[in-house]
Image 1 (cartoon, rainbow, N blue to C red):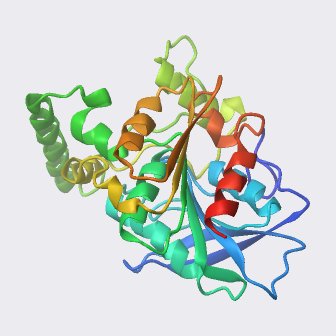
Image 2: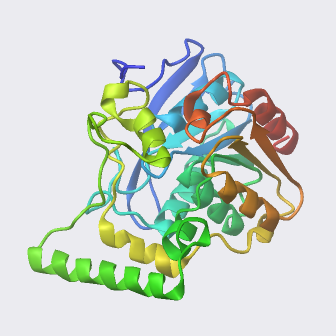
Length: 321
């Protein structure tokens, strides 16, 4: 779908109000977010609320806004934020990637929601999509104010940069990557600027055969495909950010989230399915893994016909009651 006049990659529901808000995380970074509420929401009583995070390369006008729009229709107060260093949020230099700060951004969203008179502080949950699924699980481990968690197409960025795709790196591979990144850090020092990972091009390269993972991301993010393109969503990050993930590693101690419930949703055909399955094994009870037939990784970003919103609603209705 072409970018809408209001900057969204989807059509805002006529039943929903979208309000731009800002607040500050504990690192002093200003977070920009869109607050979604039903037009007929009774603000004289308190309601359940959700912090909704985008993909690692995404912004609030894309998949997280899409989810927030749908959940607001169902009566939730939903907050879709731009992570620090991205979109309309603050932070310099732009496009830093930091697991600790991205987890904090979820907790800062909880802080903000808790200031609203019509939100119950005891009924705040979290939705993490793609990379935010991993950051959201990490946040929920430490922030006991988060009472229930849903992930969709969860992607563990830390595991990928620490141990390689499907744990394929040897110790020698990891050391070589650390040497490469630190050489890049010297290059950045000498140049007085920063280098970035490859970013999404405006068009699918003609005559270039893409690997299946890259091809799928291009289906969503690239302008010429008119699906999820947004000018704030460049895909790449500052290259030496990966050093932070090498030190952080992948998701750990997920059993600490229990007894708070987790619902993990993954596409049957998702290249990232293994991330959710491995994380699910680490979780304590209660937990549920939903595999969506025929769905790819990006289909859980914005495919209304595939995302099981009724199941998500039932989960939050039960666990944020």
